[in-house]
Every structure is written in structure tokens, then in C-alpha cells.
Length: 245
Image (tube, rainbow, N blue to C red; front, side, top):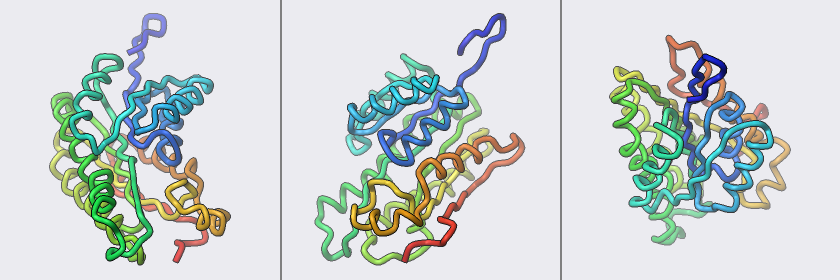
């Protein structure tokens, strides 16, 4: 809450994972531009602080809460800090992501586990923590940043596909379970976007035809700003020249 003269202005609280770079960072900037208070989480406190400074220089409000979503016990701890220092979370952006461009047979056990825990189990546990407050208040937004791999087949991305397709399906069911509570669940499905998740050689070769992270973030904000009597269940955004093969 912020008082402007005699008028109390409500500033929604947004919790974004994977907020230190790429799409997560740009989403944080977009929500901050609306006057939201953004809570930034990722494993790198240093990078989060850079993002927070950029937001503050633009006139926004940002708070840093370093966290690894695979360390499940840390999620309720960070959530309690956010509620104490900032307020109840109104919007969650599940953006933390990990991938591997290897065949299933060549993917080591530890990487298989890390991808599934980062992309699927971590977001589910985070929502287990945040949703009770949203249900009680009868309002809330959840944005799941998926990937085109949930809809198309790409060799060398079997485990990543399993994690993102799982999050996609989870979001669909969650939407039906929560809509009567005034909670909106939006699956964002971006095509190839120029971020560091890609191998440097791939970025160098295809950056010219990939989407910008800022463009994807602007699409997320557009979905958030739709009229109150509707919701965008799923938003697919692709490079204008089509998907990469």
C-alpha cells in the first residue's frame, strides 16, 4: 500500500523466479513499470542486485530474495520474508529454468534430476506455499513460463520437454481448480528467445531471427492487462520467421 495524498494506492506484489536475467529479468522490469513491487529470486544474489538497481533507476521498486527453487525448504522461508517485508504475493511468475541439449541416453542422472526439480517440482512447491493466501483473498495471478517444446518435438531435449510439458499440464488443471477462487493461471509458451539458456554457438548463429526477451515480457504484461471479465489461458508467442528446427 502507498498513500498518495488522501488516496491509498495498492501496489500488487509480484514474485518472479529466475529473475536475474533473460525473460525473468525483463518481466520484472515490465511489472515494475506498472507500479508493482517486484520480488526477485534466483540463485545469484549478485545478478539479482544488478536487476534491482536497473529497476530502481527506472523509478520502480524491487526487493531481492536469493533462492534456489530446488532447495525446497528455502521456499517457505523466503515466502515468509516477502510477506513480512513487502506484503502478500499477488502474482507469481514461475520462470526459473534449466535445460540440456543432449539426447536422453547421454543425459547424466544428476542433470535429469536437476532439470525436473528446477522446471517442475520447484514451481509446484512454491505454489503450494503461496496459494493458500491467494485463495483466502479470492484473487491472484500465476504465470508459468513454458516453452515451445511442450507442443513440438525437438531432438536432444527429452528431459527438458518432460519438465515443461509437465508444467504445462499442471497449469491447465490448476486453472480449473482455482478459477472459482478468482485466481488466474496463464501458461506462456514462447518460441526461440535470445537468452543464455541457449548454447553460445546457437545464439551466434540464430540470434538474428530469435525473439527478444523484452518482447516476450511485453506479451506477458499484455495478458495481465486484459479486461477483468476474461483471462488468457495460454499465450503462444513465436519469432516472426517461425520456429527454429
